[in-house]
Image 1 (cartoon, one colour):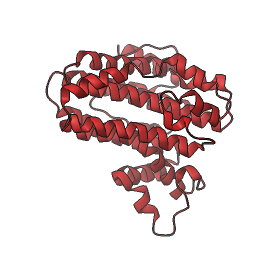
Image 2 (cartoon, one colour):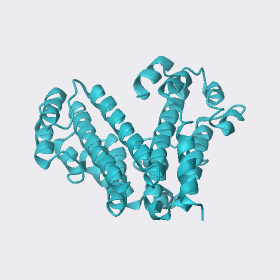
Image 3 (cartoon, rainbow, N blue to C red):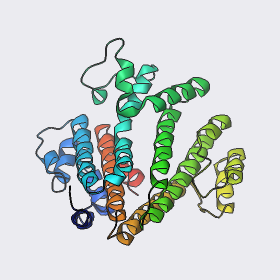
Image 4 (cartoon, rainbow, N blue to C red):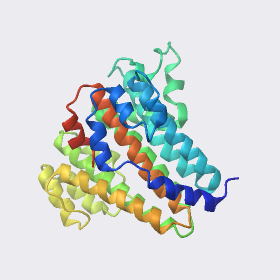
Length: 316
């Protein structure tokens, strides 16, 4: 068993090595994936050792790095094992989402999804790996009712957040309240962004109501109903501002603001729980943000998107 005090001190040291926003901007300027790997090799040596990495190889290395760290800290705080598994799940569900879309005939098979296309009868077991069965079934039902491919990712995210809420609600000790505050804001962020993006894209309001999370956040059911009735994004932002939870002039400002708040709460949990498990969870949440941004940057570079746009749109 790894000593908890040692693990907390180690998390503290690792936090100081996380990439800064300026680092992300520099990485986003990479000419190609090989250049991308070279720019992060100090933080991720395995990437730097690759001669001509593919997008899947880069994603696998980044996800593997995070998984290894989570498993290491799980030994020090076994009471958080369920929450730790859910943190890993956020990166792992990306391929499960792609598999569901492939099953529905929305996208062709790609190398990022696996080395070869599954044969008949194999699809369900693959899509349901890592206990994604419930999310996969729910996502298919939501798509069949409303015909909106973008809701598939939302259903998976909703399922993960609900499980995280359950895991955090069972925690006790000094870091527990900080983690519950983090989850409240996470729920608010999910609900507001899902509703406002849905309004912008003309998604059926019944679909948006079905996939929001009515409990666990700071937004009341009445505030959520008002947002769902809003005529457009501007009106929805007005409802959100009236709730007292957040005020923003645009959807992008709202996204940036929530991202910054989530990061600050994770940081406060980290520092406030220096002698508790909050230090570890806070670090892993910040590390997860780093991995997500790097994967998004790598995907954008692989698709030939202007690096300046990558930095502007993905780094916040």
